[in-house]
Length: 222
Image (cartoon, rainbow, N blue to C red; front, top):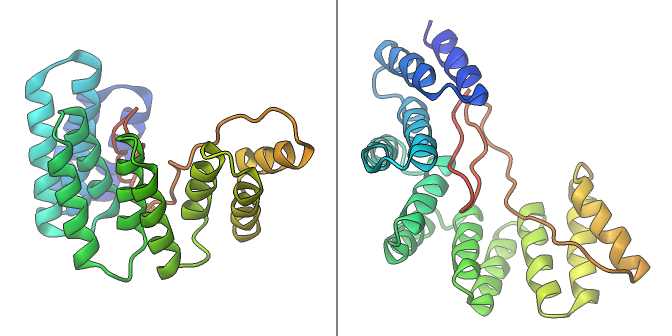
């Protein structure tokens, strides 16, 4: 029953019916108390509402639910990412940095905290720190396509198109299902004008909607 309620909540969320989504997510959580995904889904929905309707109470509710999720599962990747987004949106970048650093320390063999730290540094214009975090991520997982794309993006911004092409090509060899990256490789190989490629995408748990950096909130769990 909890799965059914959650699935209906996801469907309504994707349709933009956030009030309905909240109702179903609350019912799913009542049937499965303490579920990290349940708390995350509610947080993501309130977060999206706060962006659309400019209601501070929704932002506070989103943060509360994100913290409840992380208190049950400190390594919930979508929630870590979504909470960092929220803190940056609230002009609390130092808190976001501290949160992600704590995650990285707690999970030294997980490349994702380093990738999120890189993204945060890049948002603040510190490309060297971002590059260092991505190198650290690839030291943990040399075949992490997401880190390779992000590193290619930074090197392209630096004007090092040959190294950017190498990073993009390697990312594509790891995961060929990246049409934007494939287009980027073709463009760089042809020497024509380039278009930006986003490194925000990430495979989520089957129970979570993908989190997006800065421009959108985290996504709900299926």
